[in-house]
Amino acid sequence: MCSQPSRRQTPLFTEHAEALQRALLEVSQESFYSVAEACEAPRFDEATMEFAAGADGAPARWLRAEVAFNGAFSGRVAVTMPYTLASDLLANFVGLMPDEQIPERDVFDATGEFANMVCGTWLTRDCGRRRFDLQPPAVSAIDARASAIDPSADQLVLVNEQPVRLGLAFLAS
Amino acid sequence: MGLNLLIVDDSAMMRAMIKRVAGLCEIPIGTIFEAANGAEALKVLEANDVQALFTDINMPVMTGIELLRAIATDARWKNLLRVIISTDGSEARRNEVQDLDVRLYVEKPFRPEVMRDVLSTISTADTAVH
Image 1 (cartoon, rainbow over the protein chains, first blue to last red):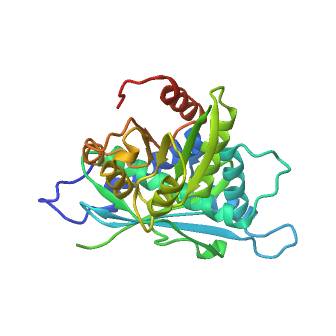
Image 2 (spheres, rainbow over the protein chains, first blue to last red; image 1 turned 30 degrees about the horizontal axis):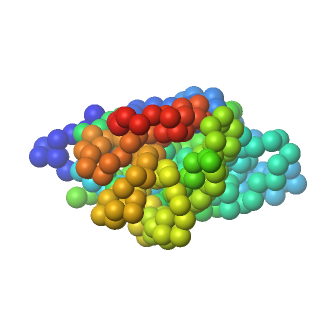
Image 3 (cartoon, helix red, strand yellow; image 1 turned 45 degrees about the vertical axis):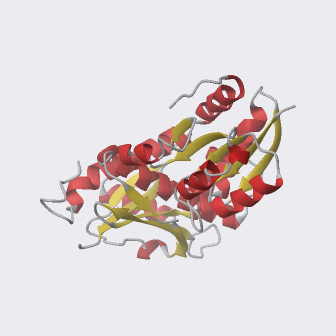
């Protein structure tokens, strides 16, 4: 739950990690018809290896969406996932047919909206009495191995058996 | 004649989903307009006859709250049905929109069935539901 600002302005990551992960599970299941579960590092690494290269052996594309939030406290949430998962999530959300072509810009947009929903859901559930403003998501293509905003603090999740990193960083106030 | 809708969201995916659900509903829908932010939405409203507005809150250029405030000051849109669709379901935000004549407040994430029910509600009910 939210700390009272009078006690401490910058919250601790550990206070919110579980709630943030719950938000990701809820968003995955409710809106994207996807199965999500927390997982341990060995299993996550295995899944990451599986999605680190494309069919041609070249490095696979991953996407990272960051959503900055400002309010009683400020920071950013980062969600990192393989491009293939982002594409699947979009298809589930909009209800696309399996053979429908999906433009790249739509996959980027879906990744951003997914992160936006995770961030907004977390703040609403965990700090529902306080107001936060969310910035539009910033989405970029990255290398799978450079995906952590804080490797020691990232939470590891599997969504439809594909690896998703969930990061949270607070701005010191 | 069907309801003309305006969907305002900076996510093309969200607009596509709402549009798709609207198309599958059994209620008569006229034209579905789209806008990526509040400023674009105002231009659409100026140029077209729209009966129902679905708007996100956090958007670049002009937010949903700013859009709703602009609409509230113009008598031309006094009968426009206003629905917020946002990840921000905080008490603070709900209080902020209390005086902006918002008919429904839908929190993301939601399933398509929720949007179908919302469309059904606004097409038939005349009572304010919050």
